[in-house]
Length: 164
Image (cartoon, rainbow, N blue to C red; front, side):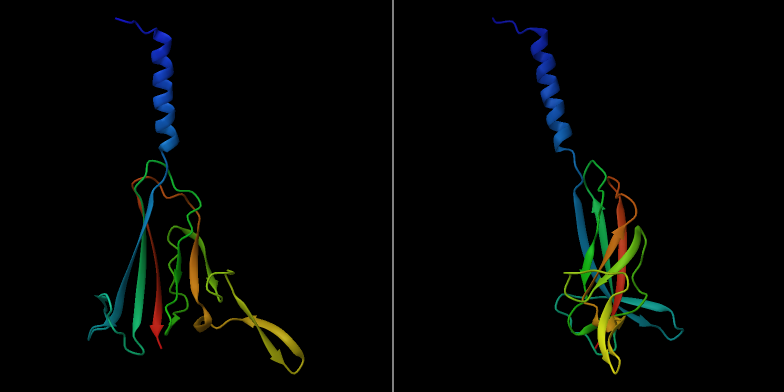
């Protein structure tokens, strides 16, 4: 029978521990849900879950909620969830939550560029000027995180659109 030296076990234990540490990381799962926002006869808000393939009616408001869950062992740093404004709808100004985020940014070009206050160029009699973009032109939004998403925890982000 061969005997292994104690030093071998120390190297083996260190290698196993090092592999476990290297594999520890955040595992973030994003879940998107939608609800049609209605009001009852007393004006209280009522949410109706959006079924897959559900048709919308012009003027309806839809609230989208993103839940970010960290299923991993380490905190997720620099989390920036992003969402699109669906075709046929317009962003409802001021509806984006900022829970867990430092700020919300918007895109006018499908996510190529972002700004907290997007600007558009407009021709006037005095030449081209920049002015704030109408929220109906937004194509996406994202939340710039202010804090880490800790292991085994969730952060929730939401926004609303109005169906055109």
